[in-house]
Length: 168
Image 1 (cartoon, rainbow, N blue to C red):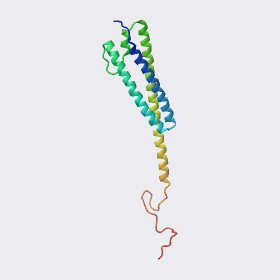
Image 2: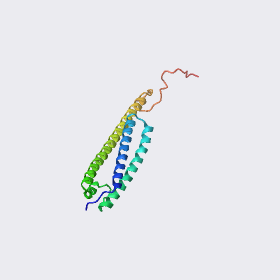
Image 3: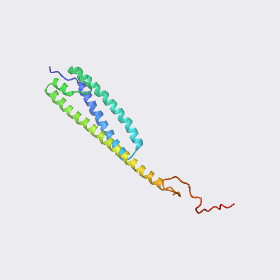
Image 4: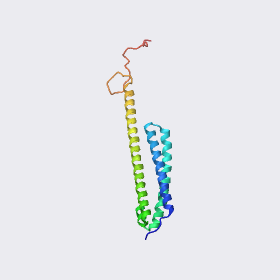
């Protein structure tokens, strides 16, 4: 049964494209902040990214429910635009297929950028940890040497030279 796809579907898909592009821009700024070690910027971007993902999920859920309603097929967690394309006529079908492919490509780009940023942040944390460990180990070894057996916490020898007279 062929039917005309409501304009609401196209509006929701366009909204998803807009939100996806905004999320990509945020991910690019996040990558720059990670490279520049700008912690305050990273914290602000993290909150912004969470909000964008929340809105994107809401739009995705609206689209999923609308597609479910139009097709009569239940989908658990993902929008199935391919099911909707089966109901469309020739021009609408090709338009939906094109939009579906573009949306899939956008989602893959977002996922790839997120993974890259995550790995870069983890590598940066590891390198900073190694540098701090190296510096703190070096500062511990610069402590003044004590007299006595190595490895034992001792006190400076009382029989060694002293600048203070011990005679009473």
